[in-house]
Image (tube, rainbow, N blue to C red; front, side, top):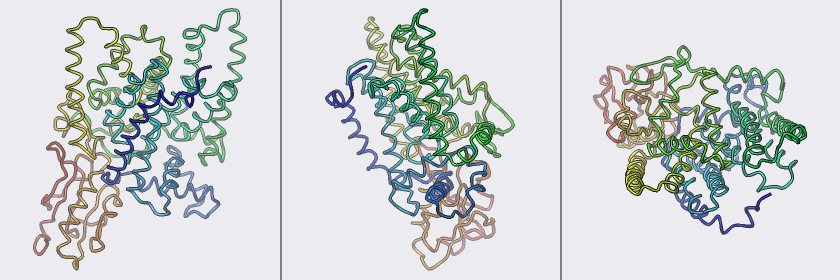
Length: 525
């Protein structure tokens, strides 16, 4: 059945070293990340989720709360876990961001384990977590994206469990229960987790008929019978866990689950988005090329190149179970996107869970290229290009920090080339830096009260204000002393009566502004 991982700790010395580095990264950086647009509402809802399960009264009744559209498209289980792990009754953003970073560890661990299962080489396996870390859109979303980043982690973990289940437990029954837990957990994060079932069916056919070659015409019927039993166990365990973790579904499974399916394609975003230099209304236009374009411009070129190469080498790499599974999962989810035509926006965020698949496939392409290519000039040239691009990506990540989720590759000229054509800081995380700058600017006169017009989610800014800074999203141009705004987000522009006195920038591109109102300029700092 395979060796158990705890019997081979020496084979994990490389991943332990990487995780040591990652822990240092987490504790050194978590205080730098700003609050994002959805965080306050999401963690408030998580508090209601906890009160519901603890039998405590909610501000809304449980039934009313669960019929809110947001609760039909997103469950609050994962954010409730984060709040528990902060060991605080109040919402502490910095502590939440640290917990979110630490909860990203399974992504790197499973990337290593999957690579190890294929190559049995610690150095080659280490490529998996390193490439994941070198994916700016993924790493940048881990600390402060409470919806999409956790799904990306647990979805990839479920794929890993399909491949590694035999190494973890010997009993087929326990393997089915284990997969049911992984699948149920993923679906409870978002309903897209149901795609794991057809992916698993395809993987089992490949595993038994192509990889292991244990199924023949003679025993096919018997195998199918046993497989259906195990599939039923997986399904029942996953749905039990789903009902347990998602109150809205658990209250009336057969009725509410269809409501969730119907709501999942329409996320209720009524504002326009910037895409390829034009403004679009997601609810009115399905741009079939929206997701492919974002993958092409927001993924490091070396990852794109080796991922594409791995697909060209599909037949040669088919021997690796992890490769087949991840490649099939990626193709299946992209096909599902074209078929269902969902309403998505904010770049890759709603399909962030496919980004680890793209990055992971590049690991196979990289290893295969350098192991099979015999022409030395090609190895030398590609090696130089790889080193140059890795260095370029690393430099960009350092320059963009802590806004790595706005990364763009060289296809559009980086962040500077994408400015004015694509959404950049759609989460508004840079408002922390803008708010803290304004706080320092106004501290010279602590006895005066300043009125500040806030945009995006007001809590993103207000949490960083001094007591004499009165923030309100409803202040008019005449009422406000200062105005905070995020560039490139609809309805967040600086009014004509405002003068920009500070901007939060990376690589010469402004993400957010602090403006002073002209009519209040006299007498202000």
